[in-house]
Length: 125
Image 1: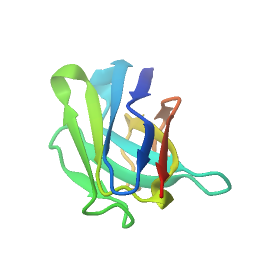
Image 2: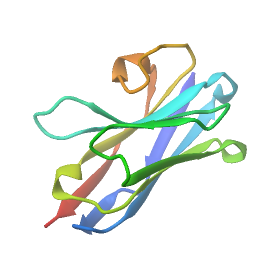
Image 3: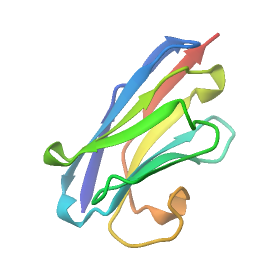
């Protein structure tokens, strides 16, 4: 089992920045990939960013490319999401996810077996 705890959400104005953190515990040695997803009211959960733990290779959803950066600190079992140039449409609950099994779907939430409780990000205009 892997436990994930997110932190760092909050309210910010358009153009502002936030950094989310996701601390993993439990069977962290088995985690191969972690990602950030978000879900706004009435919308499906959307893949935001993902990182391969072994190499640091990253991928991003089209709506956040160039504005968000995912990174990891393997010594701390923590993944970060740096969000810049935030827009009102970035408002959502942000979830950290992890997986221990291979899947070709790196930004599809169905490919992840472990989830945090979420942290709210609100961007006002």
